[in-house]
Image (tube, rainbow, N blue to C red; front, side, top):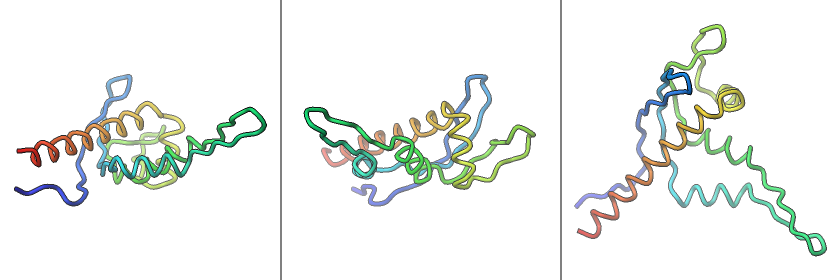
Length: 125
């Protein structure tokens, strides 16, 4: 039986609230990588009797976006000009269209879980 031993990329389609579609080439991160990213950007410290959370959620999210989203299609700026899929444009897309980017990340996470479930099922059989 063959199991997956490396990451793969896959094109997914996501719709925004208005029903417009965009396509994303995603490379889902593993649960281990997601956990490491969370740990990297989570900072808690104690001051007296109080616990403070100084986590950098935006940093976590941007690093995940840059790791997962490898390319896109049908993404245009306000003037209708296609936007290149690069670090700067990914940040702009997330800042002003968080629901679209979050939907792409959610689908990538679903793919990662599905692939993990498939691998576990294959190992059991």
